[in-house]
Picture 1 (cartoon, rainbow, N blue to C red):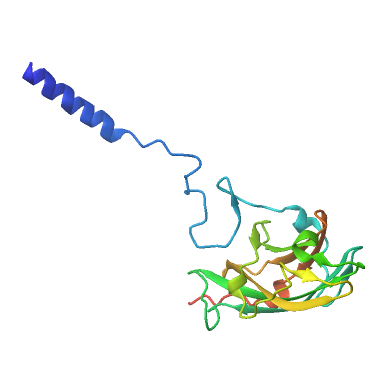
Picture 2: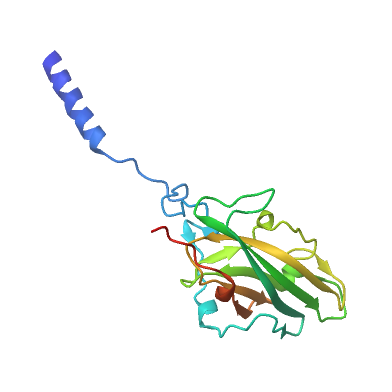
Length: 194
């Protein structure tokens, strides 16, 4: 009897050791980026906006006037090492974008209710605003209040992979209309040691 118990115990040990644990789809992080990218993750999927890749990009300084707001892209400063109080994750860099938003209405608006700002790469991967990526902090963009006719002119930061240059700034206005600016001219590809 004792021999049977030992054989069953050894057999169960071998079977159990060869089994993988069942992954919890909610807690599974294997499909999430491991490089510390600041990309939104919804149910373990990176958000992709292919539509933003199909829109003809505007040039720097060319404003777009919608009914509720006017938007503009004014400058780009890549910060591969970060700034005095914050560094990007390994393999990433900060992009600090000079933006302007003007309230075209006759009433006060909350910018986050009217304009959503993000960056996409050449694959459509979306990168949301990362407030501490910019040394300048705005109380108006991406969240804040603009009075009728007021313009907010500031810098906002993003954290993106440093090995790419094919980025586009996207303004999504009133939940649908998108305005796209090409950022690739303002980013120098990283030097590859040789």
